[in-house]
Image 1 (tube, one colour):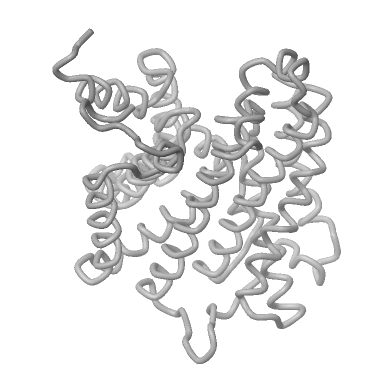
Image 2 (tube, rainbow, N blue to C red):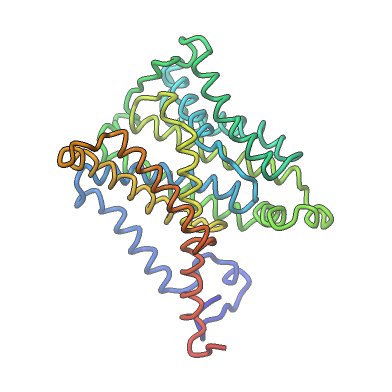
Length: 350
């Protein structure tokens, strides 16, 4: 819905994602702010922004699988870990550069997603949720029980900084620009996928898979593709994460992380890519705030402990999910769309 008085005069313009000059200006200003952000923010804030960018890719993939295709996925952190470990093996064992390791990490994670997508073609609901949780435990079991010279075992992998030619991404600022470019490409690609016939098939399967099948949609194929795409995005995010921390361990990809990703999607709004980004920023912001204030609270209140701070973070997570499910089940983007529609319909309130 465009603002009153603005209408499309061609099919191409009607299909355009950005339709008005004001939207182009707002997008240009937003990207400009992102480009200059590292030059004005502290090193800590830049590192947090890097974490948000990496997480955004993972949550966008989860949004494709769950928000658009309706396939419950509680193992997104496991697919992220598969991408991180695949990229680490490619660099440490094969000695290939990061611009090869990152795509390979996404492809290996996509393969794992395809395997679980096969189960999604036959089961759904509660049973699918249990299957994706099993992915989390299978990932941990394989990493810890395979020979340590394969995946590092409990010791994990240590990586060298990402390098492109003679340029080394060894600072938070340089990594920020790398992650920003990859995130923009991945988000733009997600918009393209969801506006294609594949995206329309995802929505049809989500709304009613029986009716979608009767209308000619390949329901099993759509479910499998949704898992493959979601896992691919998680793998790319995991590979970038590996190059950010330059150390990969199985403890970094737990079931709690998968639940956090679900929370980000719920807060931002199911079925909205922009909502996935907003939810990521808000939840990650809360996480980092609690993490930053935790040591000060422990110092001022000796009865507190770091374990209690961590537990309170998870309690707060549960409270956020509960409140949004009760008060705003469609997320913040639903409320924003209502406000935007009221503005665009003015002065014709009817």
